[in-house]
Length: 176
Image 1 (cartoon, helix red, strand yellow):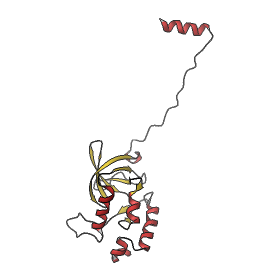
Image 2 (cartoon, rainbow, N blue to C red):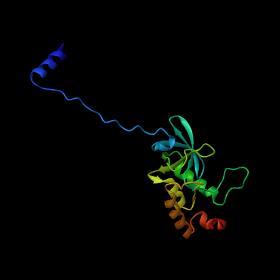
Image 3 (cartoon, rainbow, N blue to C red):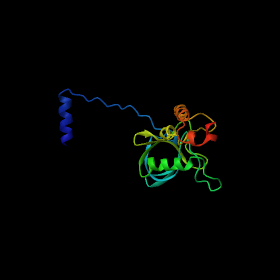
Image 4 (spheres, rainbow, N blue to C red):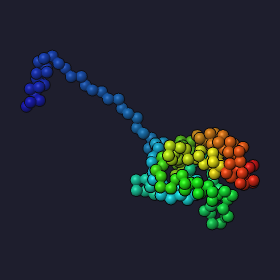
């Protein structure tokens, strides 16, 4: 009843209401590679380029995009030169930390082993770049388009190589 009185008073006073129009918002692309950066808590470091995070109660295995560290976990092969050092550095940088995980739209969402392919930010720094700058990892790409950060990673690799940092000084066969 009160609404009718108010509406009647507005009409008698010459007031009109203008309909509100809304502009539709874009629907986000539901594909995994278009997803935004997500945060996770590191629960286990496997080696220098692979670790596990907890996201929404789910354990997710992450393979860091565009880097490769010497192997340390394949029981069929001996540890790669500087592999233990790369794994130890990964533990120092990642253990128990919250990380931001960002997909690369030029790459797949997962690798052939089902690991999520992501760039990693920890303590405000690009983890992949940090590993390359310290000589703990190499810039890496598989067939197809280069990852978005690949060129920056290659520059960092060249600088680490030129100064003999990490694996570049410890592993003569790597210097090729």
